[in-house]
Image (tube, rainbow, N blue to C red; front, side, top):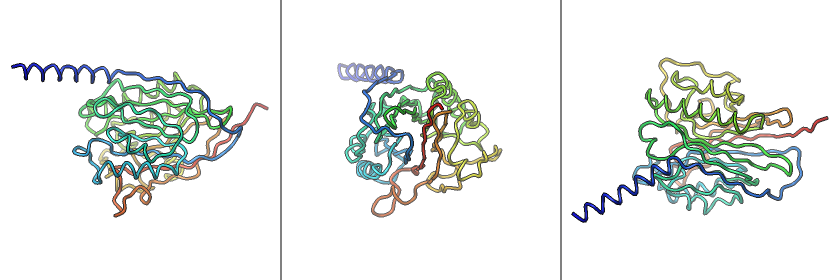
Length: 309
């Protein structure tokens, strides 16, 4: 009897902590960094869903601890990195990733959101915002998006967003995902109005799937999709009534990915994308297996700041 009561108490405490974690909004402001006074430059950015769920339920084929250590080592080649599903193996990932600026890990499943940002440029502020809508297994963790202010140069900052939207293509899942993107679009309007932006993450959405609202999201935020611009002749894919998502590990630069890098300029600041690549060479182990169930997306950008004349 006492054993059952004890189990009930433990379960109740766990449930209350989980409910609280779903609603936690985190905001951290950090001091400016020591960076050069530049007005132009180049950056290489990456977004990667690293499949950091516990080994027994992870859909990646490779051992998660060693895979995370290897991923962290490879991330050192990139200036700004957003990762998703960074849940249970963050210490292994961060142990080999040498970026001087990293967001603080929120926690393992079921308390963390799986979002981490690593940067060679100072992070001045970051916030974690949970989604207001979810469906199915996505409700088992407090997924959402994060806002990060990055200092590219002494007097120049950009706003960076990381996200992991609701997965799956059932109608209820798609409805939750539409709400996710509407929530993010409204937040960008409220907090990054007129600001230069990078939005990098796992959208779990396709232009071709009629239940998704990717095109509407672009219109609301004035963001541009680097894949559309550099690899799809600047054409948004049309809605396909028979749409079926492709296997994530089969994607090439010619196919649309759930993992996206979007950008926005303003009258003073201009990004110019020069490279888009879905990686199939770097993030692999010694026997050429992919280190996650997603492929990393890499973009090179030139940037330039113009002062008032």
